Amino acid sequence: MKMIHLSFLSLILIQPALAEEIALNATQIQTLGIISAPLPARQSGELAGMPAQVVIPGNQLFTISTPLAGMVEQTLVGVGDAVRKGQKLATLQSPALAEAQRGLLQSSTQTQLAKENLARDEQLWKDGIISESRLRATQSQYREADAAFSERKQLLKLAGMSTADIARMQTDNSLSSQLTITSPIDGVVLEKNASSGQRLEAAIPLFKVAQLEPLGLEIQTPLASTQGLKVGASVTIPAYGAKGKLSAIGRSLSGDNQTILLRALIRDGAANLRPGQFVEASIGTAGDTLNQWSIPNDALARIGGKTMIFVQTVKGFRNEPVKVLHEGAGNSVVSGNLKGDEKIAVRGVSALKASLMGIGGE
Image (cartoon, rainbow, N blue to C red; front, side, top):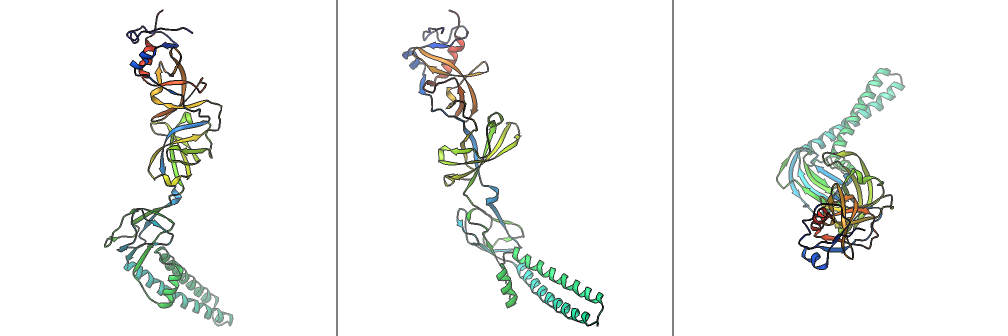
């Protein structure tokens, strides 16, 4: 191997030429501010430091709206409160509810009358007293009345009344304008958009309630890094002790950054995360033949379109080419011809890069 000896004063001012090793003594290393660290533990079959955002899976998020126009009488929960399925969230005063109940009672009476008329005409037709056309007309009237009754009942169910409440109202013939808003799931209130005394039209969002376990993860990944990824691969968030599985791999590239969206479901450690939080995730790959290391970005040097690191030797440092598999915000995953027990420069790399580009002559 060709050895190049440099003095500190001439380190930067040598003519350019190819070099494999830079000879530096301890004093020069200290003066240049070069710091070395052991190569991190080998990572086999893993993409580390992938930027990701914590999200709520779509089937776990519910928006609760006003079914009918009314005035907010009382809100019973606030943002961050844990709620149970069927728990009251708010009450409204809604004249439209009383009108819908009155319509149901009228429809119930008309349906009952149409049913009695049908029973009478069926008997008269059997006795040959009325024509078949008369019977068919009565049957049609009953079906129309019954359909209108079912429609009125469904409207009240959409307004939040249970089947038992509707049956009780029919028995008592009592009307109420109080509309109760309840939670459809066990979860946590994320948003509250109403306050007491506020008048609202129908279909205005009142609350957002979500189930926060498990949580989803959306990972933006360069196209080149997706090779070897499979649905079901392990996904970890080391900083928060969370892990899960890869649930989907996107089929199209996004915009200008040319990345693919990966989705994961985090079941273990989801309580340590918050929706909307930005994190760094690691994804297991199908193959484990590559020797991969996660090293600081400050340890990388790029010269002539190639990426390299500087490995410490007895006489100084040697440049070692590496392939960047993924570049993260602070660390990058690289592969190369390394044993794994080397020490590499993690500070002062710019001085080593400059000296490497400036080496030349005998």
